[in-house]
Image (cartoon, rainbow, N blue to C red):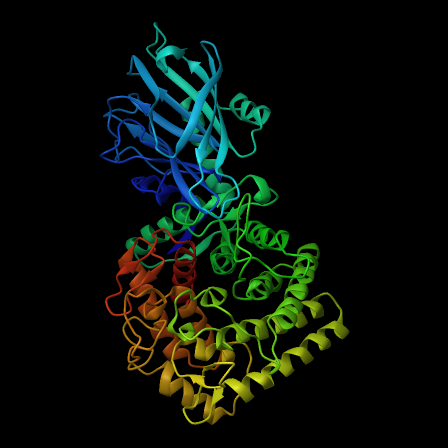
Amino acid sequence: MILNKENLIEKFSSINDFSSMQKTFSPWCSNIGIEVSENKKGAGSLWLHYNRSSRILWDNFIDFNLKQNKNLSSAFSIFFGEKEQNAQLTFTDTDTIYFASENLDSVKLFSEKSEKLHSCWIENHNEKEIEICGYSFNTDDRDPDETVPFYIYLKAVCGKFFVEENNIFANAESRKIAFTFSVKALEIDRKNAKEKIKNSPENFSKAKEKCREFYLQCFEDFDLEIKSELEEKIVAKAAYGLTANLAKAPGKLNKHISSFPSRGSYPTHFLWDTCFQNLAYEKFSLSLAKEFLLQIAEFQRADGKFPQFMCSTWERPHYSQPALVGWATMRIAKVDNDADFIKKMLAAIEKNNDWWLNSRGCEKGLISCPHGLETGQDDSPRFDNGTTYACDMNAYVLHQLHCAAELNRICGDENKAKMWEEKAQKLSQKIIENLWCEEDGIFYDVLPETNEFVKIVSPVSFLPLWAGIELPKEKLDETIKKYLLNSQYLFGSVPFPSVAYNDVNYGSDKWWRGPTWMPNAYLMLETLSKFGYTEEEKIAEERLFDVMLKDREMHELFDSETGAGLGASEQGWTNAIFIKLCDKINRG
């Protein structure tokens, strides 16, 4: 059965859970979201997803005595009360909400301030318009500003504002209330906020349809093979989750659309998350996939370094993250010969390659890794003794050197292609000379000061093979069968744990010390495919797919014994890999 974009969008009508920070109602690439749950009055909490941390502006921002009706609510709109006419709201543009009711005499606005709301005041008002200004406390100490300014413009479509009590009263004849408001944070563009309101639809049905059109725009080309109603339901949920993590963020992020890992837990643009999230975006919107990579290139430092993540007013520059931009760019270049995009990304990739080789290079000709954060594996036991020559980081850089060569060939520059291949060959040789343990038959990290192997078996031991290292076939087959496909090490019912099952450091639910992370697991699938282990690859795919299908919440990581979801839900890379595997498995 084929699921196309029209069918997919119809399935969004069954998505009606907006009851947590991760699941706020937040279409249109918005930076605000609405949390509606049983313990929230009226329209619930108004969240601001901004600058690496989410915070509530108002615990109750539209107050009335009706509960959410989940039978009527969907990804397009939220309904309150037994009938559609009671109360309903939707988004009509980025950070712009439309509210309507035919069964309420009045609605109280902004009744319960959050503790994260520093201050707010009504600046201008009349019976039809209100302008509110204020500040919210920033909740991350690394943000250079103590507060973020915001501006809200409200306009009554039907009814009148009574500002002294923050109420809007229904039209006396029709008993209708309808108003729309737009929120701006950091960049206080009043003209733009008012323009969004000016262009709002004149009634709720048109407003809801406009929200539906937004989702259709996100899926330029969606064509997915599915085999069951459950798969269809979870694919729709995963696709919706990816669109809900989109953001037209202000400040330094305003030149491109961002793809957050999770709008609740991680409302910022991460480097390696983007590269994995694009596994799905490449299937349904190449233009968005390009936007996310161009966003990374926009933040490149003069010396070629990419920051770990990027925010509206700051970035985390101390460490970078896995050199996977070349991998993600190469996937797009193979299916879409967009010369301008390829040239822009190639220039950034080449500068980034130089940064790795010059700033993280060492006397052994390897890449030095000062902290687990740089590899993305924050607290991995591989880094318990400090700086290492890490298998994964050297492999990522090696792979990106090969990508630079291949992209130059696409651009017709054979000389530069040969130059990058020569650099790749040198790094390959150094990886084999220093990181291959002949005694154990596997790649390990190495401690720089003592040249000792860090004898921890994990999926990263196989990333040099994924990156293009060539071993004699007997050694290749031996290491894959002995470790990667061995149930005592890495091939259990939840395959490819971040540390081998039989390692002394292993804990099935201990962050990067044992759980299965889908990005690492996905690269192991590519490794098996690369070396012709098609049957084993298929088994691993089905096991990983089953874990995500049973979880249903698309968690950040998974217990490698039970398969239970851990960390943030609605995680971008899990959503993407689920969609990718669903299509691959079902198409055979």
